[in-house]
Length: 473
Image (cartoon, rainbow, N blue to C red; front, top):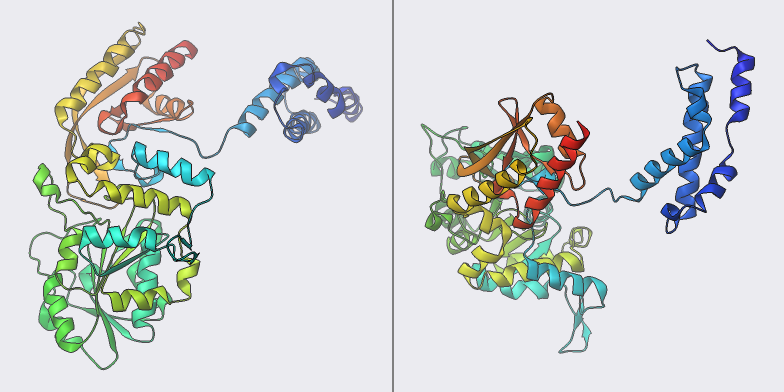
């Protein structure tokens, strides 16, 4: 253990920030790096060595004092500082609408238009025909009405905001009747009862967890009833001895008693997935056709667009919502509007939407295509020529994700990969640390790559990641 005098002697030998900074000026690595980033990285490297010496940690004193070693550490720190925190990743989990990985991917032509809008001025709130200020909602309102059949529409920043805004506008200081079996919680602890309380409305539960009848709603009606709310259970399912009131029945009841009816569709889709061999999910068009006054749904789940909360319904209700001051706090920006409009335009031709919107394409992708892609990746991995790597093509199921179609299992093809001398946990960690990160899943003490969610141009990324890995271990 070093004495205090020895520690002070070592500390005095540490080079100063200015000395290391001078060395970096001669190194091409630092040519385009902001000086502030370099200086902060140098300070951090020297401080770490100083702290280790003061605490008497076991350190290689000679290496700690070498300026070349300090510069090497500074390069590592600078690389990390210059790497964006938000960066692309390869989704090899098989979860199509993966909330943690950014949910839906945008179609290429949508991205192209998005870049154009982002890099130039636009008519965001300017009416070109009238030559005066306009409404940002007009850019998507007409096409939303065209696709859904609704009288009016608007968009806010996400579906939670849409639900909050609608409840506050329609039912503040009033009672909202909801089936007990529809008081859902979604990711991030978003709960319908909590949102309702925040809106100023009072919750009135009816029915039981598994069975609710029309008579339950009728029995709960009172003078203070401001809204009948139906919440689609998009992220779970109740099976067995069940009963629920349809949106059409609820809309009829609302009309009879002059009470607005709202449905929170959650994911929301314009496509009838049952036509493609998948489970039936209620479409926005079907909900509008029931006569419900207002319907809300997400833009970045089954719709396959950007994060947004879409509100469609009767014009008199939507007009009231637009006038709510909270609308401004929840409004979307020009980039979201551009991405949403571009996505919606693809829905004018359903076959085009299925081909070009990545979320729809992945959900409806034939398993034969996935198997071909899996075989291609397996061949590239085997060509690395490392005998420690065991690769097997296996059958597994993918998921829709994003709180949608909870019972749907999509047949898929995966690669099960093991590397001798490396645990599955360590393999998964090293894939996460690669650039770009390769995010898979762990099963049967192996790393699983589900090809349903892997894009064609990502195959080389995965192959290079494994090639680099086996060279290090």
